[in-house]
Image (cartoon, rainbow, N blue to C red; front, side):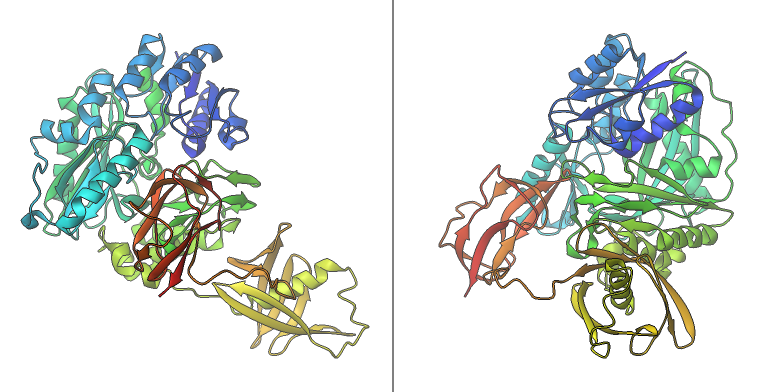
Length: 616
């Protein structure tokens, strides 16, 4: 039996595998980069091994270092998690050659299915070798890996070559394999997948369907099981196709077969992921199983039951990302001061309070999972939990998730993969809490002095504070009197450094307030930035200044870009790599480039000045 498992991964999935291992009495080993030295997965493991360096290429993509770490730590098995080397057949062979148990499918099965081009050939589907206008739109995809990296939708033939180049660069960075291919892009389709589980004795389970249609940058955001609104015959057909794909490569362990369902309910095979998926918890909730425990059991040679368990109810998962959906999903970094969700939902995370969110890895903070007897109840439960969650730190997609779950197109189960293309603007429209600035000001006043802010001096004079909320400046006024704090239009029922209660039109409203040694103030689910009383006159930027929207590395600079060049608004100037994704930085206005600070290979920080375009 397996006694010690090394997880060749990081973050949330490493913590999730460790949780099951602890329940089974299995010792755990973590590997960590220098950037992850104090990460949660390294802290909760029984033993850790350092991988020198910070980038994935230096650390989590170095199979030889991970195998060496497993041997040194006395592990007898390796679990790959998802991403990184989880679908790398050479890594699986190296683990087996070292005499260790590989908790995954045979290398030959990975080889047959890990490349999407070879998987399509196996299923009798040809990719587009030569693209014409008649083929548009098409999808450029990385042959290896997943998670939306190396994927581009191309709608104009003139854009194809540039998108192929960008996809190859991103795929090489994320997976160490720059192979890409082109396939038709199905408009208005739904992304539906089937979870499979196969033992070494010939039994293959198809564990229902999952709908993963809500995606940004081809990366899933909200997933659920079972997929809503599928005709019974189609759901049965998908299960049969998934089992056929598994048997075709003598599959073992957990895997997922993915399909695109066209509006006329025809199934188009996409790929087979030869690993555990990020969204596996919804299947666990519906079938009442632990997929990691079953992976371990299969790796030990134990058989599955002949028939899979019975599905019950509906499960929904939302991925919390540190990102700004309203500004091209820009990833965010900084300190995660507080992360908590109400009881009754499942939280899978690789972070805890006080952890730093860096630039080197995916910006996913956590997954929140709700299970209920019906789909409508699961949607309501998950939306409510996210709405009440405490998230203090970098900007997240929490508000987007709540609004998505409550959108009519989603609640009726009629969404498709173009959901955010159609609705992103309305879903990210700011809806500021009008009394949040006043609550922040009253809490701050109490926190600065246990006697209040000196009400004895000119008590008739109003106190003023300024905050930025949802991108706009707000100024609030309040008074100190002998009877306490007062503000126009509201009655201050209670005010201390952490809680403010205001009565508005006869209704008392509670505002939880938090501050962590910075100018950020958190009032319920609203984040505000406190402004100084007197603005800094030196903090002015020249018109047309182009600032780095995130920390990252300059990986590409537009050809022939130099000071004095004429540029057009929206013209790509640089590409930054941050959190495993490439981000295109464009000219803010049409004009002349008067300053150029960005250099290929340069590490930049948030708000660093990259260039200045003097408007024409």
